[in-house]
Image (cartoon, rainbow, N blue to C red; front, side):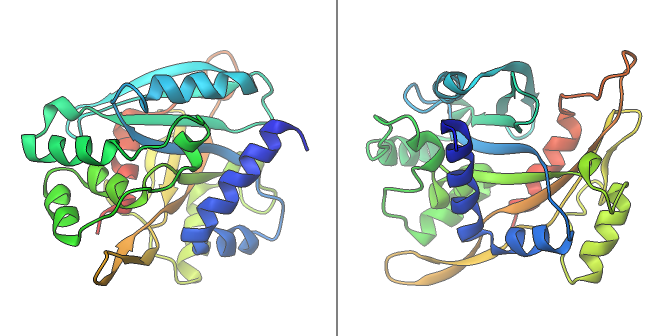
Length: 259
C-alpha cells in the first residue's frame, strides 16, 4: 500500500467510526464502491486554512481543480484532482471568520490555541483536541451550523461520496435514493432529494447525518456527525465527464449535518 492509499484508508476508518451508516450503506450496494470525492471543513486561520491543506495534499499528486464561494454560509472552497484519476477528488472549504460576530470569533480563536497542526496530516485526521460546552455549541449553531459542527468534530472527513457512474447495479441517483429509503435511511431533502441535473453536468444526493452521542464534559448529547453522498457526473461538450462541483447544489448538501 503506497502512502496515498494508506492516508485514504485512515480517512475512511476515521469517518466510519462516527458515521457507521456509511459502512452499512457501502455494503448494501453488493459491489465494489468507487469514491468520487472526500470533503473537509476548516477555518480561514493561517495555520489551518485551505491553503495549508492543499499544500499537504500536493505531495500525493493533487492539483487545483476549481474554486467556489457560498454567499449565504460565508464559505470559500476549492476542489483538487489527483494526477492519477483512480483517486478521489478532494473538496476543501473554510469558514470566513471575519464575517461573523465577535462572540463566534472569540470562541474559535480560543480553541485555535489547541490546534495541533505541526503534523499537517492532523488537518485531516486530528479530530478535536479541545474541550467543548453544549451552550457554546448551541450559540455557534445560531450563527453557523458549519462552525458548530467544526467546534464538536474538529479536523476530520466531513463526507465520502459514492460514484454512481462506477456502479454496476445502479445507473441513476434516483435508483440509489429509492434503495436507501427502502432500507430506512433519511435523505437530505433541502432543495429536493436530488440536487443538480444533467444540464448542470452533476447530480447529487445525500443521507442526513448520523446522530452520535457526544460528551460535553458534564452531559452526553446526540449531535449530527457526518453523512454519505452519492454523485453522478455527465459528459461536457468535450465528451469528458465533468469533474467540478455546482455551488448551488453543494450549498444544499452542506445542510446534511443540520440538526
